Length: 141
Image 1: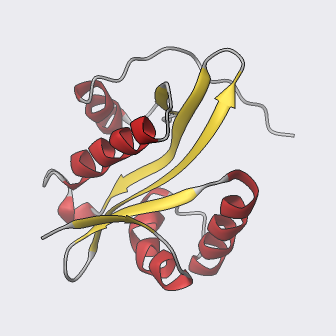
Image 2: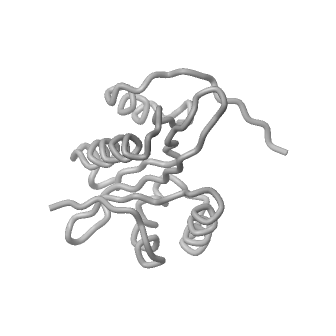
Image 3: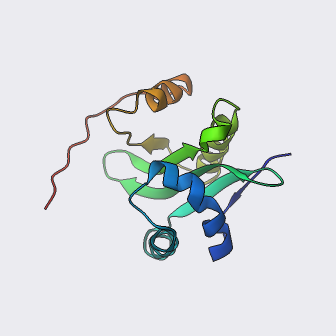
């Protein structure tokens, strides 16, 4: 039976790292743990994951924020399913849990930013009834 929970310890974060590393190849385990802890402290960032008795199946990074334009929302910063567990429903279960969590936290929206080349992810988000609402612009400095 699978279980969804928020990572509460360094050991939880370390257990999530191999799955997150499939998406965030630029991070080593130590940096992932430290960044996750720092972002939790500064911004309320949480790592949420679904696992069975043996393995982490999917991982998401989430935070709650508020904008003048849109009110309170939950942002999914990262959402990735382990390569060998894709198309098994784990990503959908985790996404649905996040939506329910956002409702409990009185958020008005769930948002995420996805790279323009992640077509499989876009199909997943559109199937979950998400809308494409904006272009995201950035500038390296």
